[in-house]
Structures are given as C-alpha cells and as structure tokens.
Length: 522
Image 1 (cartoon, helix red, strand yellow):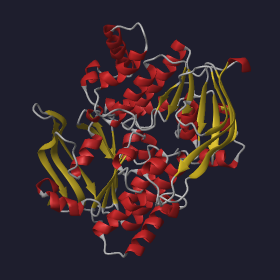
Image 2: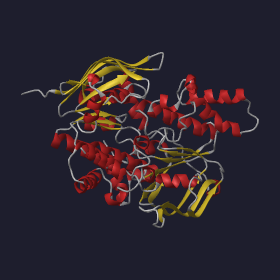
Image 3: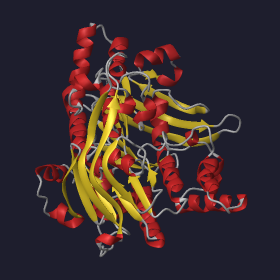
C-alpha cells in the first residue's frame, strides 16, 4: 500500500510580531498534511492557529514575520516565492475561509461580484459561465435564491449567510488545499451539517486537502482524519483523531476535552423561573420588523422587506431565554429591534430596562479599530455621573479580569487581539455598566471550548450576582441547552415553537425543531 505524499509540509516554523521589539508567537512547529486528508488544528484563542494558517498564504498582519523555517507546498517553499508568484497560488491552488467574514468581504462590492472575481483571475470562463458557476456554488453552500443574493452587499446578509459566501468564494476554483479557519462558527446546526458534508464531498470527490481550524471539538472529531493540538505557539499533541479523543496523553488536551463536556452540561447553574407576568422585563406584542433595501439601479424604488413577522414574546426578570433558528431567520434583527437599533417596526416593545446592552455577533465590526481597549471600555462609564478617572480605570481593570484577560490588554488595539479575545472584550464592554437586561447575539461563537466554558460560567455568575436577565441568541444547541430556562425556535421570521428548554429539546413538536435537533453533531 503506497502512502500518500505530503501536499503541505511545515518545518521548524517560527512567527514573530512587533515593529521594533519582536515577540515570537509560534515556536519552531513542524507538521505535514498529506494529499487528500483532512487535518484538524485545535487550541485556545491566541495559541497560534490562525497565525500559522495565514503564514501559509503569506498573509500575516502588519508587523508579522516568518523568522524561521520553511513552508513546502507541492515541492515549492512558499517562504521563498515572490508576491506575484503567491498571487497566482492564492485562491487557485490554496484557498482560505477566514474567521470573520464581515471584515474579510469588501463592503462596497456585491457578494456575487466578489465570488466571481476568483474565476475572473484564475479561469478562462465567459461572463455567463462565471455567473452560472457562482449561482451553482452558492446553492452548494446552502444559499437559497442565489440570483437575488448575487446583487446584495455584505451588510445586507446575516452573519451566517456572510460565512457561507466566504466558503463559496474559497471553493469556487476547487483549490488543491483549502484552509478553513473556523468555517462553521456563525452557522446554525442545519447549515453546519451541510457545510461539513460539502467539505467531506470535496475531499472525497475532488481530493481536496483540508487544513481545518476549529474550537468546536465535536466538529473536528466528526470531520478530521488527524489532529494537532496547539498551545502557546507549540504543538503539544498530534495523532489520529480517534486516538486523541479516546486516549489523550497531554494534560492540556485532557483540559480541552473536559471543557467541551462543561459547555454542553445542562446542569450549568440554570435556576427554575417562578416569576409572574407582572415581573416581565420585556414584553413584545405582534412585532413586525422591516428592512428597506435599494433596488439594483438608483432610479428604482426602495423595497420594504418584512423580516420579523408578528412575534409576541415575554421575558421575565431573572430568566434566560434562548432564541435559535437558521441563519437569516430574523434572530439578530429581533435583537436589534429590542435594543432600539432598528426603528422601522410595527407592534409594541415594552422594556423595564430602558438601556439594554447588547453583545454583537461580529466583535471586530463592533469595536472602533482606532481606539485602544482601555478607551473602548471606559467610554460608556463617562456617561455615568460621579465616577472619577481613577474609578473608571479601576472598573476597566476589574472587567478585564472578569473575562479572563490581562489588565495590560487595555493598551492594545482590537487588531492586536485574536478573534476570541475580541469577543471577550465585546462581552466586557456590555457588562461594564452592570445592566439588568443583556441581549447576547452569539456571545461565545468565536471562542475555543476552554474559554467558552469560562465565559459561560462568567455569564452565569454575573447573572446571579447582579440578577441579570438574558436574551441568548445562539446556533449552538448545546450552549442554549446549558444556559437557558426557556427557548424559542424561529423560522422564516416567526416563532414556530417555544417552551421550557428541557421540554423542547426532549419532545419537539414542530418539524423544523426536529430537523434542528437531528442536525446537532454527536
């Protein structure tokens, strides 16, 4: 039996960041990916997963530098190629699905044009053939009505839809090596299952080699042939996925697996709710929410689209209510309407908490890139009278410690943080004013399991300490199961099922709920 050759081989790779004083973040790591295999890379935020992946395509952020080692791809050392040679490889031979689609997509170009651009660069297809191929790829990644989506801009799509556009963009040229950096992070379980099945199909039918980076150990276990575990820029364990999950050798790997169990533990401190209707902190009556979209041409009339369709909902003081449903069903739109960020509504929204706080789905997009973390966290406190500069700074340091970040992070910019670290800053900013009602839109979607467990425990403790109420939006059914007293299932702008979380999960009545639960990876 012939062994498959290595398509990608990384040897003694070291990566450093910094303009003057360099700090090494990846320390002489070596691993290979064989032709046609799927290799998983796991580790906590800041461990070097994404940096290593970006180095393969020579796309390190400003100040980043490969200081040692080689990156061999099909006999070529990518570290020695010119930029013009790398341009020919990117997107055609090697492609990448980035962690944060909103910051990776061009906001001034329609998504269809951006996907088609890859074919324009790397194929000889006609304009009609390119457009047909784009439509076909959009359908493959689970996007309905591709002819309509083609002409939309990134901001007009939900987070999950943007993620799928990124996957379509990466796959359109059928690359030999696909680097997938958290490709299913923002996707609901039904679409996640389709995307993973699509990755497997590409791997099996076309021999696409996949380097799969994820914090979701369940997904990695079901998809990947082999696995490497990164910690603090070093490989601490590697081997067959099955062997590592069944018999982890290193303490850190054992810690990762234990954290995954905690995240999906339904006994994570939920308290039964005995509030009466008079204790409602939020009442929604026949709520309809609209988006106004411009037509393709300037002279066309603006179109008003109903996204949330007559929802009624009560949230009691002190409880956690979960909202689940597929991307584009209206979850985030509902959240924005509740917090006053969308004004085109009909119906009633009655809030006892006049200024509910929100943790947004895309942390990088919600943080001002030109300001340091300390400034971002302190700014809301300036609106509160009676707090001195020293007291504000103390509150900033306290909240950083609460979300498990060093206090020196207050001097960094958002670009200096990993995706998971930025997510924790977004949570810290929402919590620093000690609100009574918090809307959490995918608050742990970008976090590895160890930090997920810490943040969920933090949210639970804050809830108990300050008697908070949560509206918890997530595509992760395990997180909803562990955190929420009640759950509402949304489908196409409507709530199709609601009830106690345990009842809905054990005895779903609506067909869509059954489909959602059956799609959860085992």
